[in-house]
Every structure is written in structure tokens, then in C-alpha cells.
Image 1: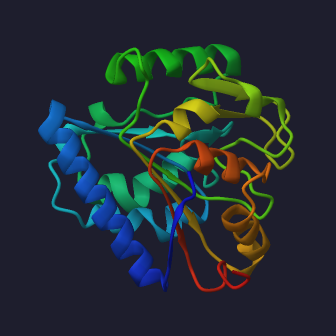
Image 2 (image 1 turned 90 degrees about the vertical axis):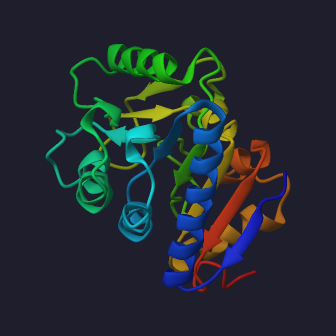
Length: 235
């Protein structure tokens, strides 16, 4: 599906993100009593996640997962978990029991991937469908830890897979796979800065793009791209 595109300044992007999540959470909670969300790190954590901390949501009914994680301790500044904890989870008061950290710092990434998949299915059920996925995107078009041309892109059966040779440091990571990201009820990709402009232009205008971000957006049922004016400057 061709993604919806919203371009604005950072305040308007955060406002749109907050409204989107509030609406999706309300629908999910009304439908089955709880909501599930998976988030990424990087610029989307810095620019986007603080907006969620301001929402008047019953966080007791929200389960938080990670789209990917680097193989670093949960106290490391490079950890996606520690970023979300500082700007969102602690300020919002999300219960610890509802926070499902990806243990990419475990010695055996393949065992860790299987364990996280089991944890997801325990909450999500057999389908593994998430209500809301929030991703950032790299200048190369990667999302989560799914990089252009990497074998992890072709994984179609697992919910989570190990990456031991990522093309950017650190090489060892865990990532949700393309099917689970694309099949979320609502998928949002946020893009900030001029370094993302060529990638955003290709993603929006080329239906046959092989960039991971293009692939996940095309497969999504309800995709939305939130971009600042620099990232959208080539459109």
C-alpha cells in the first residue's frame, strides 16, 4: 500500500504521533482489554517517544516491545531500551511487568531471539500481531535492524531473528522480522534530517524500491510516514 505522508515541524510530528497512538490504544483496549506497541531507537526515540509520555492512557493496559536492540547492556547509552526508559517509560509510569525488554546482551543471540518470540506470543497470541509499530529509518533505508540486501530481510516465519553481522556497529543485534513489522494494525515511520531526503523520496515515489523501509511500508495495512521538512525536501 502507498503510505500516507505527513510533513511538518518537530512539534507537529510529535502531536500527530501522540494522537495516532492514543487513537490506536483506545481501539485496542476497547476491543480486547490491552494494547501492544513496538518501538525502535535512534532519532525516533529522541524526537518521538517523549510525546507518548504526555498521554492520558491507562498504561496498566499497554504492553511495550522493541522492534530491535543492539547487543549492549541495558544500561549502555546505545541501548534502545535505556533511551525509551528515560524519555517515556519512567515518566509515564509504565508498569515493569508490561515492559518486554529485548535481551540482545545475552551471550547466545539465537536463543535470545527464540525466547523473545515466545514472550511475544504469550502476550499477542499465535498471530503475533502488534497494534502499533513505531520505526525510525536510516539514510540507507534500513528499519529496525533489517538492512538493505541482508539475509534477515528474507525471514518469513520467525517473529524475531538474530543479526550477527550488521553493516553498522554494533554488528550483533536482535530484530523483529519484516512480516511482524508489516502486519501491525498501524505502522508509523518517522524520518528526520536532510540525510534522509533521498531515501524518503525513493520510498514515496518508487513502487519497486528494494529499500527495507519501502518494503515494510508497501506490505503494511495502514502505513504512515512522518517526516520533517528536511527529510521531505526532495519530494
